Image (cartoon, rainbow, N blue to C red; front, side, top):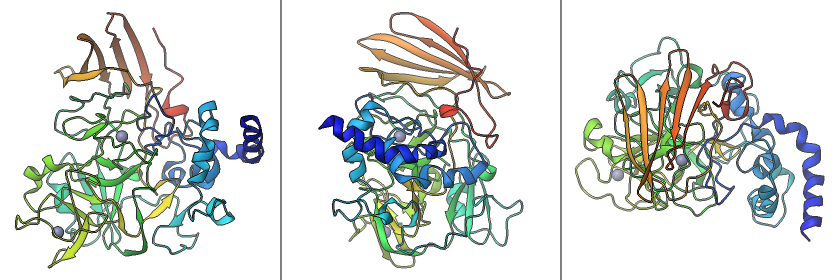
Length: 429
Ligand SMILES: [Zn+2]
Ligand SMILES: [Zn+2]
C-alpha cells in the first residue's frame, strides 16, 4: 500500500519537478516532531526581488503542498504525510483535487482577479509619499524613527528591521535554535497595508488557511503570524514556543509574533490599533477605546460599531488576533501574497529538546548573547552582525563544547540564493 502510494505520488510529482526551482524555503519554526509547519514564506537568498515572492511556489500548489517544510526537497516524511497534505488542496472537500483546486493564487474575496495586475514590484514604496498622511500611519509612527512609513493612494508601506525594542526570546521552552537577526523589510521588501480595505465576498478563516507568512503587522514593525501552525492544531503560545512578548524566530532567524502584541498599548495609547491585519483592518487591544469590553465579535474577532467601522480585537485566547480576513486579500501558496521576505544567513537547525531560554541581551560591542538551560546546565549562542552583513556565531553547548561559524548574508534581490539564504561562504571551524 505504501509502495503503491509512493508510485502514485511520483507519477504526480514527476512532471512537476521542473517547477521545483520556484520553491522558496520557508523559514518559520519547524517542530522537530513534524514536518508540517510551514511557516514564513520567507526564503533565503532573495531572488528576483519582490516579484519572486509572488510567483514563488504559488505557481505549483501540489509541489508546494507536498514540500511541507519548503526546503525544495520532498523528504520521506513528507511523502509519508502526502495524503494529509494533498487533502489540504481539496478545498471543497469532495475527496478530489479538481483543476481549479490545483490552480494557484486566487482572490480570497472570492473574485477571480484579473491575472495581469501583478507588476514586478508590487510593493515598491513611492520615493515621495503622495497626498496627506493616512490615518493608518499613526500607529506605526509611534515607533519612529525605527519604523518608517511611506504611502501612495492604495497602500501604507512600513519598513522595519524586525528587531523590537523589548527583550526577546526569554521564556521559550520549545526552541528550534533560531535567534533574532535584522531583516531587510524595506524598499521593495516593505510591508504594505491596504488603505481602503474592502470586505471580502467570502472571508477566509485563518483556521485552515494562511499557515505561512504573516497575517498582520504590529505597530512596531514586527510581523504577526498565524497563532496555529500548519498542522492545523498546534497553538504556538500554548506549546511554549513564544517568549514573554509573544514572539520567537523563524527559520530565517526572523523575529515575529504569533499572538497580539498587547505590550504595545502603552506606546500607541489606549484604544489605538496595536497592529493592522494585512487586509487593512486595524487590530485593537482587549477593550474598546472607551474601555468597555467588545461585544458581539464575529469568529474572526471582528465587529463594526460607531465611527470605527470594521475592526478586530485582541483576545487572550485563540484566535488572539484576527482569526481570518474580513477583507479581501490574495492567497497564494498558503499565505497572504505578496508580502515581504525574510532573509536567513544559515541553515535551519532542529529543535533542542528540553531547552529553556533564560537570557538574551546585546552588549556594547554589538554581540548578542542567548543563554539556555537544559537540565540545569547552561548553553549559549553568541552572534555579531557586522557592517558588511557577515555574521559571526559562537555556539557553546551544555557539555561545554564550542563551535564558531561565519556566515555571509546575500543582498536582497541579488539573484536566487541557496537554501535558506545559506551562503557558500559558510565555513564551520
Ligand atoms: Zn513562528
Ligand atoms: Zn470594537
